[in-house]
Length: 209
Length: 209
DNA sequence: GCCGGCATGTGCCTCTAATCACAAAAGATT
DNA sequence: AATCTTTTGTGATTAGAGGCACATGCCGGC
Image (tube, rainbow over all chains, first blue to last red; front, side):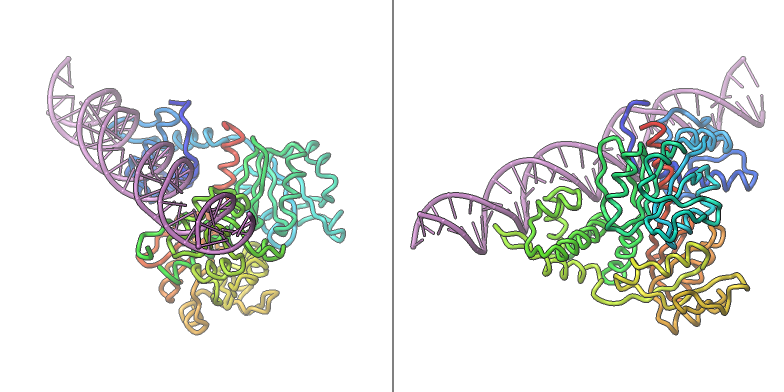
């Protein structure tokens, strides 16, 4: 089972499951069925069982899944049992908001470096106390701080250049907020957070849907 | 052709095409082939032709597509030929950053209302001059300002409640930044911008991939 | 200790989306 | 004017993901 190719959608749903499970933990629920979990996540029960089947057997037939146990297992699958070191590049409005955002820190994502091209910003500190470095120190700093993921919040025209630098500095995973398609070499994972595309989807829906 | 069900992925790609085309306009390119556009967007050329085929015929055989013309046509399909009125709910770090963000304004998305539950914020103005209202005025204000899309930037636990209020106020499209799955009635479109999920994808990739 | 009920795990089927490959057609060339 | 080149538009094919349904196996009751 373990060596099948796992759909990206499955990973995304696992992430959703962890949220629902955390909610259940908070509500003192100890056991949950795929049916119940499916309702909470808005998916098909069989989908959940199949998603989990990629990674092993986690449930008890006739009973369901033990909430805490399953949550622990899924987190381990996703790699959320450890802390991740992130760097932010581009500390404008959005960049600052992200660094301060609880969603990151709460889940074990920790910003350990910040970069910006604006000379006015270099040397200053973010609200979190994080010092802002110029882009040309990216290589050194990223290696020193063991940065594993890079978050790109620059204007679109600089995004590719920054991505190249981050890759060059040994960063293997990029989260791109700039509205542009980034090219990265094999072995580097790029995820785009693209709210202009989402807005366009809404606009289309309201226009034609 | 026009009455086939159009895949959501097609709409998302159309949005990508507009970006690439805007780049080409900037570079003074007048004609582009599906092959070239495909390279720019990182998709298959046939995919582009098929996506466009849902909406009509836009190219010239043996030549390609006239950049400006195609850009205009796609924008019209997506509904980007007009201005859209948005409301933001939750003007914390992220919410403020979004309102100020050029990606929105540049494309015809205009924030015409802002809401927040924090009494300290109500009555104050955002950097853009936008006045912050309490949530209980949502119904009146949204109708008055003809809000068409709502952007939810509240903590996860309030997102559903806010969504309900927005729907109640006649808003038909929601962009949700809170890390939670929102339930909305038939006829309401919800798009999630979920960067914690994206991060989890990266974490999985670095762990297992 | 056996039996019944219930939820998982999984093979099979369906349906949708992406890719291929070719015919149609426009413009260039002779 | 005829032919050649090029690129579109689209029918056919392939791939893949989601859902169904049933057999498997565990727990609790008798």
